[in-house]
Length: 264
Image (cartoon, rainbow, N blue to C red; front, side):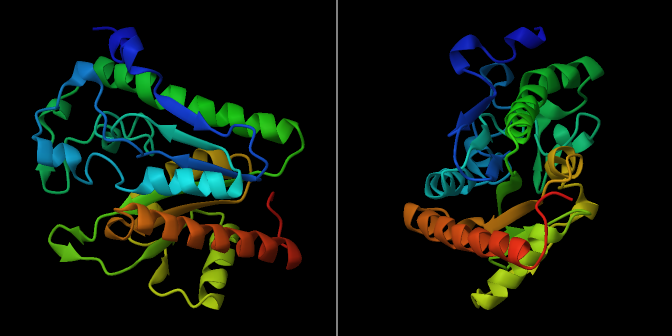
């Protein structure tokens, strides 16, 4: 197999873009939007339960991102294939891009991949996705528009048998401007169980997209993690899309009125 056949033409492109001309300064990203596996990779040796679980995708995240895109009139770039095929929030040199084990699950189809196997996956899934984000952001910056990068994720309420009771994690890397503003807005709104760099942080290697697209361009950026049992149905998804829209509106106003800047 060569890299042109990893994704068949009938399976469509590696990414989807919604509202590319949206009026909002916010650019939404959903790296773990889909549980779909490229046909060429089969099931990677996993059963149906594993392929439906949180190891394959961020449950509820894509729908929250779509609702947020609609509410804000913001562009959204989503990955259309499972993070087990390639985790687009990891660079090609990271072993986590092709996980041999995810939480309690071994992933047989990712064991012992050669350098050419990894390159094939990256060429088919990672590079097109991030090039689409590059093109969207750079076009907006070239037009003199403000750009704020927001990535949407979800996390499992039980990880390695340990419960996680947080509702929302607001994550950042070296640029904490937007995260600080959102945490302040969450406190003002009296939202419960909202935490900084929860349930992961930059030390866990989860801020690749923020670094590649936000830090390099010095644009305000944040990664949001919502507990997935809160967004497993349409009611929860609409509720959290509404809350995040309010948080973002208050945060962007706070950044500008308090003298903060969306561009460093």
